[in-house]
Image 1: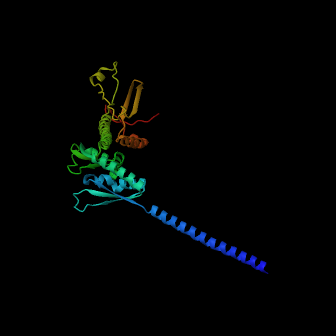
Image 2: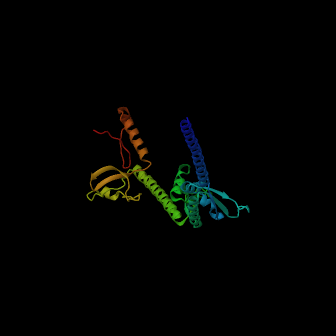
Image 3: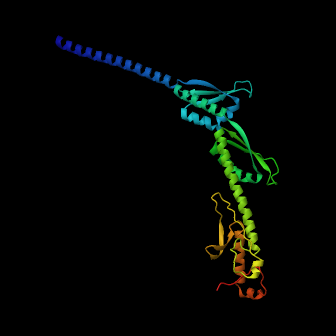
Length: 311
């Protein structure tokens, strides 16, 4: 009996010991887990705040259009940047407050200082262009000038004042940015001016060429050395064609071909459509026999425009 009682007591003691040990182990692990959670919270919520002075003259350039520069720095460094005023009015410098992890704040501060240094080198230059070229520079609804601003990262403003009715008047264009940005913007403006100049030359040549066509003489002809006396007294005038594009070529129609070295051409221009419509109307009109009979050619002369049937 005593032996059985001792055995039961031994097992009860072992069970109680195991239970107490389990409870102690659970409490110990729970305390360690709570400590780890608290430590992680402290590490994740630890932020660094840095204030960077931004000169008033470059605040706009540092922020960028619609905050583009600041947004880019924030996304790259995973920080938050706000601007505070020192409280002495708009004439004083601004403070950029950077919040984030120590590593992110350090990187954001370096990028912000680099942006300040770059914007400190911003200058403003002015160029003058013919008023007739402003339309090509600005573009439809300002699309062209906005594209130049995006590509050059410079600010381009066209003066709206002055007499727009005078095509020879000059307009002032103000360009603000770094030297490289201004150089890029000027190159793009020069390209627009070259395109406008080529267009004006093409229009002038087209008008001159079309007028010559209406007068009944070709733009170019090789003199016929064996022509009659009458043709020598009234020789054809030869007109020089000037290239209107940067590649040195000019677009023409071949009107008549006598030989590979002698042919007649007409310029391609805005009035080419009018000539095509004239040819179509004359073809439709003289294609009817009644109209040909009612308009007989009795005494043609040099310079008359005549219609004949192809046989």
